Length: 615
Image 1: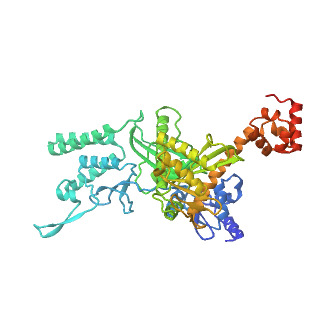
Image 2 (image 1 turned 90 degrees about the horizontal axis):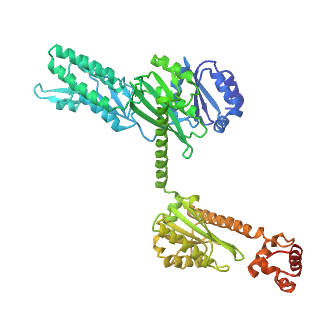
Image 3 (image 1 turned 180 degrees about the vertical axis):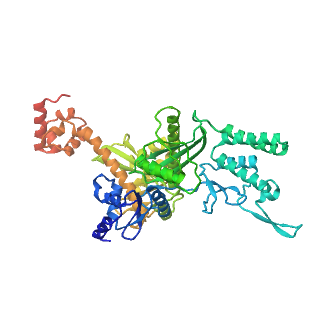
C-alpha cells in the first residue's frame, strides 16, 4: 500500500477502543496491539520514532497496511489482542511460548462431571484449572480428590453390556465399572462433592475443612453413621493435604504474585506466578518469553499477567496481586478484571517483610528456570550438527565428527621473537576462552618444523597431565613437512591416537593427511573448506597479533629505533647479529658498515657518541 493511502487510512481511524493489526507488503501480520483510542495510538507509531526502540523502528518501516477491530471497551480489546497474538504469533509482539504444553485439571460439563488431567482445552462448557508447573503436583491433587471424594478421574466413559437386561449400560469410567468410583452416588451428593473439589483446587482448604466438620456432626446426630464415616475419611484426607502445604504469609489472604527476570545471553525472560491461598503456597507456574532484548521488565510483566488472566482456564481472583515491577498499563488490567471477574483487585510492589521475601524467592526461581533453559539450549545446540562439520567428516573420511577443532600457527620476523598460537572452534564457532599463545623456547633460528613440534608437545603433555578436553581434530597451518613434524611429536608423547590431525597448505588450499602421499583437494564451494579456512585464518591472525605485541615491547622502545634512519628491520638485524645494544656500541665503523652500510653505521655511532649510552 502506498504511504499516502496509509496516512489517509490512519487519519480516518475512529477515536474508540479496539485492536490494530499491522501488516507488511505480503499481508503477513507484523504486530497486534490494543488501544483506548485507535487513531491516537496508531498515529503515535509514525510520530515518535526518536523515542522508539530499534526493533519498533524497523517494524514501522515494514508496515504496508493496517486493519482495526473496534470493541466495546479497552478490556474487550485486551482479550481480543491476546487471542490474535496466540493465533498469529506476530514477529514484533512479546511472545510467551514454550516448547511444551502444560497440564490442567478438567471438570467436565456433564450431569455427573468427571475430573481428569488434560493438556488440551476444549470450549465445551467444561472448567479447566491450572496450568500446573509440575505433573507430579497435579497428580497429588487428583489423588486427594480420589481419596477424599471418590470422584471419577477418568477421561472417557465406557459402555458395558448389562447381561441381566441384555442392554447396554453406561458407566462413567472404568473405575465406576470396578466399583471404586462415586459415579453411582445420589445426584445431590455427587454435585456437592464437585463443589467441594472446586474449593480444594482453588486452595480454600480452611473453608472446606469447616464445611466437612459441620456435615459430619449433622450426620452423626442424625445417626447416619455410614455417611459420617465417609465424611470423616474425606476430612482426614483434606487435613493431611493441608498440613503438607507451606505457610508463606502471616495473614490468611489470597494472593497472586507475579515476577519476571531476563537472561541476556539467550535473549529470553521467565515469568513466575506464585499462587497463595489462605496464606499457603498452593501452586507455582512459569512461562518463558523469547526475543526480549528491547523490552523492559515492566512490558514483559504486563504481557505475562495479561496472558494469564485472559486465558480460557478457570481463574478465581485473589484479594491482592503482588508484582516485581510496575506495569506499563495497570488501569486496563483493573478494568478487565472488574468487568469480567466482578472484582477490584489492588496491584502492589512489596518493599519489605515476608511479601518482599516472597518476591525475591520468586525472582530466584525465575533465574533458576532461565539457567536451566540456557543449559537446555546449549545441549540442543550441541546435538545439532552444523553442515560444515558433517561435510568435513565425510570428505576427509574422519573417524569421528570434528566438532572441536584445535588449529596451530607459527609466527616470527626473520627468525626473531618466534611465537605460536592455538585457536579452538566448537561446532564452527570460535571458543576464545580456549585460545593460547606460546613463546618458542627450545628452537634457535627460523625453524617452523621444530617450532611446531615444540608447541604440540607442550600443549598435549599439559592436556594429558591435567586430563583436559581432547579435540576431535588438530589442524596444522602448513603442508606435508609441518604435518610430518607434528605427527612425530604427537607419537613421541603417546598422543597421536587420541584424535585426528591434518595439514592445510595455504597456496592451493591442499589438505594433507598422515600416511597419504597425495593431498586432498576439497571443492572451493564446500562448507568444509570454508570452515578450515576460517579456523586457519583465525590462528594466523591470533599469532600475528601476539608477535607484533612482543616485537613492539622488545624493539620499538629500544635505543636503536630512536636513531633517525634506523627502522625496525635494521634494529632486529643488529640485535640478532650482536645480541645487545652494549655489544653494538663497541663496534668499529668498518665492522658496522659491513652489516648495515656506511650511512647507517655513521648514524648509529654518532648517536651512541652524543648520548653516551650506558651499558
